[in-house]
Every structure is written in structure tokens, then in C-alpha cells.
Image 1 (cartoon, rainbow, N blue to C red):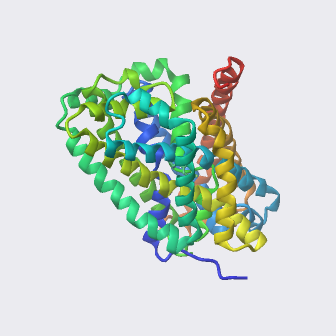
Image 2 (spheres, rainbow, N blue to C red):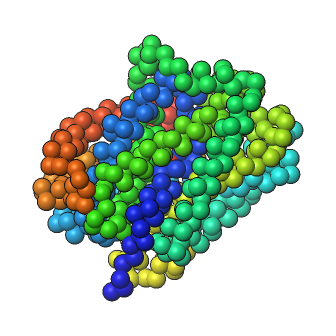
Length: 444
Ligand code: PFF
């Protein structure tokens, strides 16, 4: 059997994992979910969810991946619990579905890069969205985005994924810092910052049920948890890397990039009318931002860079989603990585086609993942590491790191008790919302 690839360095792994984490979720959904859910009140709950639930869950995936050193399905067997491999399979399934619609949005981003260059959305931002978000343009964008993703994954873990993310992530960071600097000069900046950063705890208390599920879903999604991605990426990791230190770095950088995106988006929104128009579904973010770029001085150039950031971020995430099925199929059936990448990518492209028909399908795929698949996956992972796996597997957390036995034990109890309870509450509220949506015909 061919030698399995590993990251060339610890930094290579961190870049790739940050690349997976930083994506449309940070720059597109995070600011707009924050805007739609009460601003700073949402931000507080989201940050708690990221650090208290997301970080420990990331350690769960890392432990399984590095201990297993296989694709996310085989890793369970390698640790000695082959009958739990369905958990990795569920993550793989979620990766397929997610990439299928993620790529459609990636295609929109391509259209908006073009639109910034040509000025096509300057006149009527709503009409432009309508023309690119469904129909032939949407299918075309989706296919181009998938081809880019396939190209990188086909080139391999080090030559493709590691090399691409080492360029894209610094690019994202630099451009966002520049855009946030520019945003300070806008007229509505102060108002935007205040909506974004001054929490009203009354709002949290009175909207708990409606804030928690999106905040938790967003925390898992942004950290790429529950999709088997972090299992796959950590399986290429050396024995002497510190899982808590690497995971901590990934979570912090990912959070900083999301926060930075808020520093770009909120001033723009408040310079051109406030946060009210920003809620309500996938497209509003594009319409609101493009409308703003169309009316601000040098908006086309700013828009071009903004959407370029979004494209880099989206690609460095989409490759991680494709890596999961590709690593499984190529390792399990012995096919060549490049052939597998083309075949799996093609399949995913087809699954995504309904999401190009209109935003209701896309919204359905999105909610299915956020509200159902993702929390179930995380729950299974936590139960597996917390209650099923033996202590030797659990101790993988401390290998190669300076954290002591007591850190591992505290984490284990947290994963046994706190994470499942938080996820069950989220799952309950999410399923209820999904059911109500389906029953009321909100999707179809
Ligand atoms: N974390 C990415 C984002 O925030 O856009 C999306 C994502 C990538 C989710 C990979 C899940 C995943 F496995």
C-alpha cells in the first residue's frame, strides 16, 4: 500500500485546518447571523458556544483522527470500535451535502467578483442577485467552483491542500485588515460598531430559544466540526504535535477572522441603512453588500477585494469538504487520489444542482445540515469519546503536549456531560424549527 501522506510541518496543518474553518461561515454567515439575531447579544452566545463547546469538540475529532491515522471511517475501526464507523460515515454524508450547496454559493461569489469588475450590480443589486443566484449562471458558477476545488484536492495533501491554504489564508487576513481599515472611514461606522459590540443582556434572556440554535450551529459549522473534516485532517498529523495547542490556535485565528469580518460588514451596513435589511436568508447578505458597494465611492474596487477574500476563504474550506470522501474512497478501494477527486467532485456537483434552482432548495440543504445532521454528528462523537472509547484512546489528547492528566480528565468529563446536554438542547430546538418550516411550506 502506498505510504500515507502527512503534513510537512505543524504550521502546514494549522494553515490547512484554519483554511477549513475560515470560510463563507466567517465572512458571510457570521456577520449576517449576528445582524439578524440582535447584534452583540448573538455575538456573546456565539463566542461562548465556540470556546466552551466548539473547542472541546474539536479535541474529540483530533483524538479520533490522530489515534486512528486513517480516513474518518476507518479510523474508528483502527481504534478498536469498528461498529462506530457509521459516525464517520454520517460526517462524510454531511460533507457531501454541504459541499454541494456551499459550491453553489461559491459560484455566486465568482459572479460577484465579475460584477464588481464590470459594475453589473451597481444599478440594481436585487436584480443582479436574481440573475446570478439561480438558473444557468448559477449552474456555471457552481461548476467552475467545483472544478477549482477538485483541482486542488487532486494534487494531494501537501502539494494541493497545504500549499493552497498557505497562500490563501494570509491573503484573506491581509485583505480583511485592509478592508476593516477602510470601513473605519465610513459615515455609519460608529453606529455599526455599537450595534455589533454592545450586548444587551435583556435581548439574550428574552430570545434564548431563538439565539441558541443558530449560535451553536454557527459555532460547529465555522470550526468545521461534525463533518469528519477535522478527523481527516488530524489523521495526517505527527505524533509529537500538541493537539490542544494546535486546536487552540485554530479556534483563536478562526474567531479573529470572523470578528474582523464584522468590522468590515457592520460599518458598511450602517453606512447604507442599518442592520434591519440584513436578516432573512441566504441572498440578503449579497444584496445588502452589493447595494452598499454600488453606492459607495470606489465601491467596485472594494467589492472586488471583498468578494476575492470570500472566494479564497470558500475554496480553502471546500477542499476540506471534498477531502473527506476522497480520502475514504481512495484509501478504502485503492483508487488513485486524482481519479477519486474527479469522481466524487462530479457526484457532489450533481447533488448541488437543485440548489441552483432557487434559494429555497439551498435553504433546505443548509437547514438540514445545521439543524439536524450536524448536531447529531457532534452528539455521537461526544458520546463515543466520552463514554465508549477506552482510556488509552482518550489519552491521545495529551500525547506530544505538555498538558497533564488532570487537563485530559477535565476535558473528558466536559465531553461526557456538558457537550451532550448543550447539543441535545440545540438539536431539539433545531428539529422543531425544521419541522415547522417543512410543515408550513417555508421551503418548497
Ligand atoms: N468552516 C467553513 C466555514 O465557516 O465556511 C465551512 C465548513 C468547512 C464546514 C468544512 C464544515 C466543514 F467540514
